[in-house]
Image 1: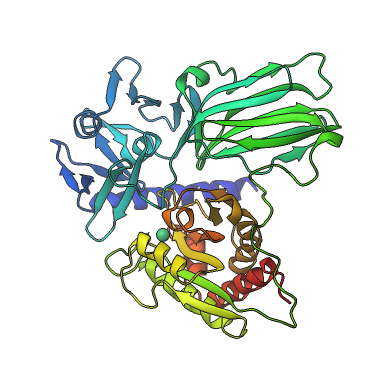
Image 2: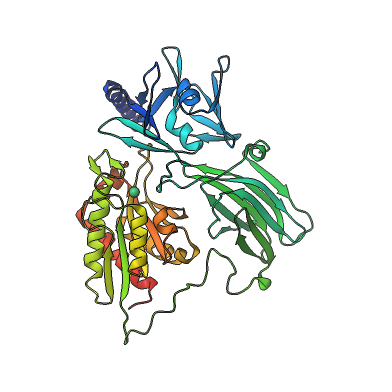
Length: 470
Ligand SMILES: [Zn+2]
């Protein structure tokens, strides 16, 4: 066993060395902010798949506040909301006081401090695009060039509990948590807030990565605690240690999410949670009088907008999206109760707003956008299904299970995010990220014809389940 382990280790070391040699041999990448090239005296370098840039690019090029402490080899980068602390050659990074592991670390090269630009930029709210062929890193400030693929990061600004056992999470732009996980011994409600972090004033108070408040003499709860559960994807977590008879109602507003704890018997039976609304569409009519359902299938990207790049297969996201959509269409059309409308049926470019208008104009009953994801870290893999409006969550929950079955990849969950096509449409609308093009296993599945066929069959099964069709 030991021998086997050491051989594995040796192999991985060799692989890492070859990988670095390969990368180092390439031409240095170019950096762009909002389409404008950023220049510096030292060229950016790609090391193990992450782009390192001199610190000056972050301050002069991107306008962040930057500090360098030579004694401790510590780099601090901040904007109004976020403080990032990195140490040369260390893979752990502190973000608003919370320690996170990453695979991109800052390095000293020729006596210059080089920092991983994507790690820092994404934490500070930039979106990124890597153009492989041109070896260009494109960064976009979300205010000027909102990237529909990258959800906006929300911040928790305060967590308090009142006399009525209502826990209030004050926030700026945070997404409502999904249904909590319920764990036992002791019984806990675990709420995850996707794409959410804490302002520094809260994170600075963390002890051992979290803040815990004990509650005495309350049968509904004995404690609650919150932490930065994960950074990839960015997830804040609230855990409430509750009694066996404690129920809850979640209400979410623009700047506050409240979780009201109450005895189970007092929880309204039709949940008042905005997360799980009653489907606003009328129940489909009985099968003997079938109605025709208008389904809009949206193949993400197209033509000049190729989407993400799959290095393992040298293919673009737009190709997968279209191929998958055409297969879902063919599968749906086997059933005369479906009328399928495509936002694009070939390699053409369609604006996001035109996709929205199109879905509205055909009075779609269901809108499904198909995409594939990408990430710097090639080990990230799996299926995500996104919704934005509450009336889309039931559709997302059902279709997600079927996409998982079709792709056979990791479950990354149903998530809420403000992609334009699912936000600005009015019918139940979801966006599927069927896998990661940057992960070899996922990429092979995404471009495998049999897997695509299976995906199509499963999505159609999901649509039928959702519409309660036999
Ligand atoms: Zn996409």
